Image 1 (cartoon, rainbow, N blue to C red):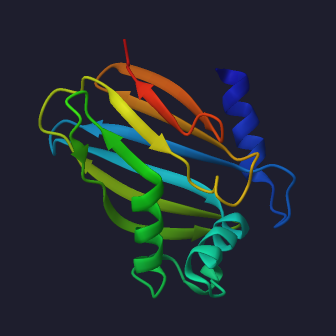
Image 2: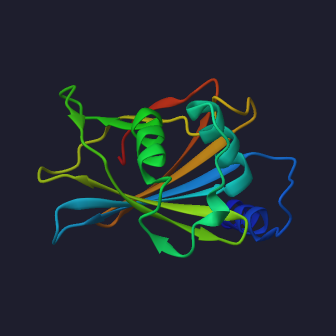
Image 3: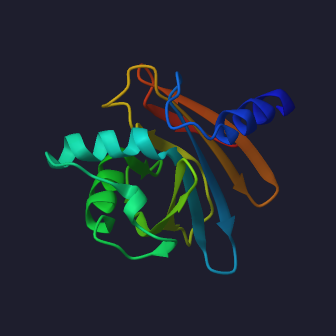
Length: 167
């Protein structure tokens, strides 16, 4: 696990805009007080711009946004995330995922989401195929923390949807 963490630290510490690998890291952490999963997703900016440009049939530049908050790209980002990040409970109920905003940081973008969950987390099906429409070698790592349980899942083009269980 430490080696995996070190790999992704090195992966995202690269300040060059061009890279030979395509990866994202998603953190889902349950906030019991608010009864919500707080989700942050880190994506290379140039890769994300390519996927958003293809989805919108227009040139998207995320670097124009300054800091964190609302900008003209938020509706497009929200639409893209809603299509590529979904969670289905064991009872086949699609949980709503709310887009909170994004932040530009060097060569990456942070996306912030929330998924309300009032009932105990019993797993389900998670779809995380962000950027897989743009890059065949895209790898999306998802770290889930619920109460004292932690687990990491890796999503690839041949496995964009997985059964999530923390047991």
